[in-house]
Structure formats: structure tokens, C-alpha cells
Amino acid sequence: MVKKTLGALIFVSLFNSCETNDVPYTPMAQLNASQLTLSENDGGTVLLELSLDDVTTSNVTASLEFQGTAIQGVDYSVSSTEIIIPAGDTLARVSLFGINDEEIEGTEDIIIFFKLENAINIGQSTVSVILDDDDGQSLASLILNEILYDPFNSGLDGDANGDGVYVQNEDEFIELVNIGSASIDLSGYKVYDATALSSNSPRHEFPNGTILPAGGVYVLFGGGTPTGSFGGAQTSATTTGMMNLNNSGDVLTITNISDSVMIQLDITPFSDNPNESYTRSPDLIGELVQHTSASTLLFSPGTKSDGSSF
Image (tube, rainbow, N blue to C red; front, top):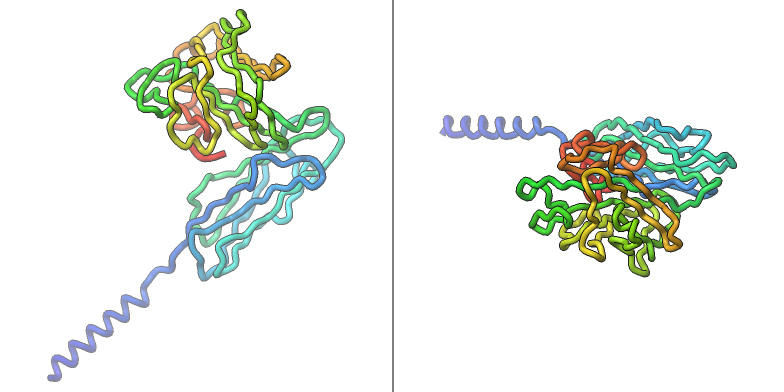
């Protein structure tokens, strides 16, 4: 009887010892901006939101550092340089405010770096916001962020539209982003290659009611049936079934409903056999580079170059 009692005591002691060595859970954190653009107009605001996947017993802090071409205190202000989620909560925010002035500065960027305490980052390493200058230009700004004129012809590596087959003309695409603070009505906009422009026969005409909201993304494929989420972007295939972009010696032209040129890109200076897209690096504000210079992907229609959402 004594041996049995002693064995039971030892078992209970070991079991309790294991319980006291449990490691507290470290929550997963993400930092996101409420929208892509910050208007310089009075009242322009973007929320920087820190979120956790679970509550924690300790405060979680994100210390913010601001870089980019926009200047803090001159072009914009921030309510705090720290975001603190109190123990027991899962969400906290700070605000960016645009500072209105009369200088014509063009589009500027704000890049937010952050350092976490008591949490592990599972999202992007930085957050970028476009500061939209309202002086001397329209608040609606359409940019070409990515173009694929030479899809890879190895198996399905070139299946950019996600329909399960590789077809050169169908998997070509252009990615348009509205970096302004107002919606753009794309109704009647036309897309040409050099041959189509010379004959005034657009490869695509956007139908009535095509609205691209502020921060919105539109991916136009040459043809096929675009299949996938594409980061939540609007997608379609051209009205003629191809964009017919040559690997060299071609020019992409996009005009508005009044036939004014909104975007024009001469493909000639770029590689004539890239087997991948060209994308802005950094997204939205950088120069066009071959996609594998920006990430391991060959293309990223509807998303940033690393595949994350805008």
C-alpha cells in the first residue's frame, strides 16, 4: 500500500510540473491601411490598423517609422507613432491626416515601417500609402502598374488568366490602378497596340458603367476566361479577344472617351523575350522592371508584385 501511494504522489507531482512550464501564446499580428490613397484635401484620412489573431495577456505595441517622398509634418500628420493593443483586445488604430497646401507637388508616397513587441508579424513588412496632391491635377489618377506582353510558353507557367490553358494572345494582360481619391469612369476608354492605333480599331473598348473606385484595380486580359480572385480586382477579357502586343517594336496606348491619350508605353526599350511581366517596383510608384526582379513570381495580375493585396 505504501508503494502505491508513493507512486501516485510522484505522478501527480510530475503532472503539475509540466503544467507550470507551459509557454504563453504569442499572437500573430498584421498592419494594414484602410485605403490606398490619402487625399491632401482637408479631412483626408487613412487609418493604420493593427490586428491580432487572438487576445493576449500583455499589451502589443507597433512602433512606427515613416519614410517616403512625402514629409511628415509638412505633407501629412499622424495621430501617434505607436499603435498599442491593450491586453485582452485584438485591434487598435492610429490616423494619418493629409495637410492641404497650394504647392503643385505631384504624387508622393508614405512608407510605414514598424517594429512589433509581444507579437509576430504575419503580414507585409511595410505599408505604403499614396499622398494625392490636389493642386494642378485631377484627383483621379490612372496608372499602368503591370504589363504582360510575353507570357512564358512552358506548360502552364504562362497561364496568367488562370483558365487552365496557355494561349499567347489570351494570357497577355495590363493591370490598371486608380491611385487617386476619386472614382474614374472608364466607360468608352480604348486600348490599342501600334497596329490597331494606326487603323483606329481598338483592341478593347470599356463598356458603359465601368467604374474604377479610388484605390481600385482593373486587370484586362487579352482573352480567355479569367478565373481566380486576382486580389479582388475587376477583370475582363478584351472585346476583340486579343491585345496583340508584340515582344518588341510595339506601343500600348490607352485613350479616354474623348480620345485623349491617358497612358502610352513604348515596349521597344524593354526585353523582347522576357517570358514574364513588367511591374512597377515598388508597386504604384517605381519604375517598370522584369517581375522576377521584384519577387519570385512571373506575374501578379490584380495584386502587388509579391502576391499580396493592394
